[in-house]
Amino acid sequence: MPVQHIALFGFKAGTAPTIIDRAFQELHRLTKVIPGITSFSGGPNNSPEGLADGLTHGFVMMFKDASARDAYLPHPEHEKFKSFVLPHIQKVVVLDYDC
Image 1 (cartoon, rainbow, N blue to C red):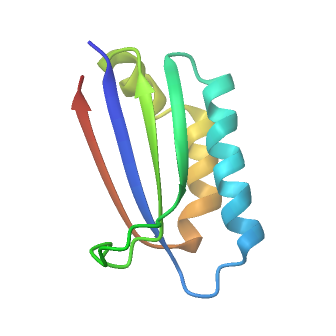
Image 2 (spheres, rainbow, N blue to C red):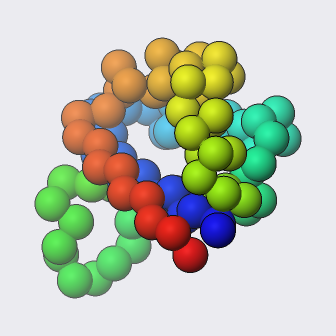
């Protein structure tokens, strides 16, 4: 059964746009180097509702199944991405569900 992986980021105030752009380029790159990712989309929040609670950006990845998601989490390329992005993150929320 496919798994939808949703992550919402609140980048720290003053984070350079080039850092944010690189973060999303790296996330897209992960879809090409980590097996089992079937789709990716992401970008800045543009909701007019005002309910983002400080979250500024988000992304969605679809995995072919839970085992693909489970392999992604400790994957060295994912760990490398986290090492790059987490110093720039004020808040992160992750939610996964079966599709």
